[in-house]
Image (tube, rainbow, N blue to C red):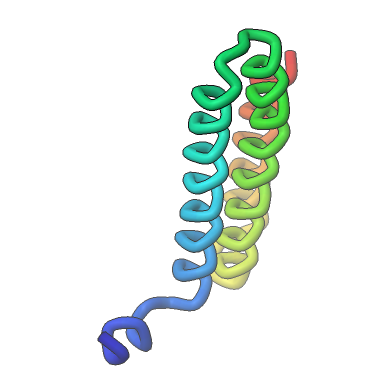
Length: 93
């Protein structure tokens, strides 16, 4: 098991860890909705998730882009940044 963990790229391990934390937050929110059993409270929990999801995506993308920055040209990094910006624009508009 230790050999396997050593062979994983630290950036990939960080990105996967953040996604696991995000999944735990989502699962906890779903359980809270069931426990509260109230539509208003469920909407409040869902509103909090609307902040968590994009934040996790931005952090994960930032880690990935920082690890690839030396391998990609500026134009390709620009396209990736434009794609992320369009995703965020679509989420918030």
